[in-house]
Image 1 (cartoon, rainbow, N blue to C red):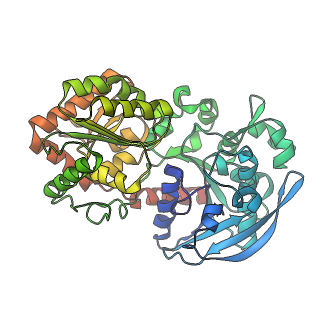
Image 2: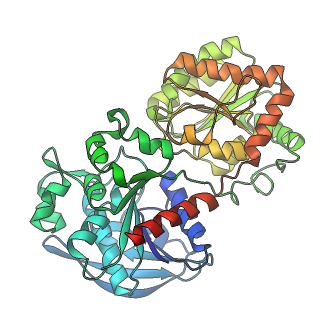
Image 3: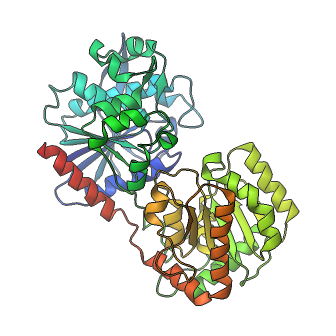
Length: 481
């Protein structure tokens, strides 16, 4: 099967969040399936262009029609990737090459990714890669299925398009003039993209894609409700017949406690107690906490944003430190209010709390390995990867039962049996605290039960093999329509 994947980011080239991780692992997992030919299209950001680790060759160049404009595009093929995925970077210095800083956040992001969406289709035609399936992701490539249906059917008569929502909160809004000035679509597609008098490109993708997926089964059901859908619940409800969820995997080669070079000691599911204890002691020393092997170490690696449930943790944090002989370690950056809170908390409880307000992948791995309990009380979580990373390293998750957290962390009872972690149903601080106290009680009163819970999490297959096969099953159904 010929599969073309379009995305605005993908590790290791450019990454801002979970989409980057998925675009590193999913194409590779699909390429490992016999008979597949997988290509990945990414913008040629300046940070990629300046990175000498990637060697490329120009394979095509053309002009992209964007409203009344014609914009240059060169297709650069990476020549030193060896996992079966062919990567094409779309090069335009005006949109991608002369930018510094973050991937997103420029005033012309709408124009940049409208260009990229149409350039992906033009690039496929230019290199004569006519895919069976196009898989595109989030608002940045939401115009791919719109353009495909409206203007490219002659070039791609049998191609089917899957649109995947990783986070519905970001939908690609623009003013009404954007349709005429920038998109150049036939007039009859104005209603497809119109939402309350503005352009919403995610709405257009939902309406025109052959199949709409999201990144967990529960999140797909949640998107039927206004609380989660950010205004698109009605659109999704009318297209419910083509909406489904596939829970993401993680890169089990990268996140592997038996081989992770960032760790001071290695361990596996069959022999983890000693290695994990060494990682915990080293981590406590590294972050300035007292080295206490019997004190539970609660950890969090997160973007410091409200929807990550940090308001719940802030509400109970001092009470937790007063009532429990436990330690808390936070790693992340984000909103100033949360950065300040955790810095102040570490000052108030220097023997119990450490706050590392930074981005550090090596420290993140050591936190996964050295922690005892992983906190993830997210208000909403389309899939979540951190809880799976934590379980891979033998750290027991305490999570809000929403989205992918509900799908990947079935609840354990007070003896640690029957599940993989501890959960709470209602989004409030008291329920979060109750779930956390159940986990702490198991840790202190039933060490054997806690270790059995750790081992079950480590034994789980969170690799991309199962999700990739589910994608393939959907691709085959799409081609049969």
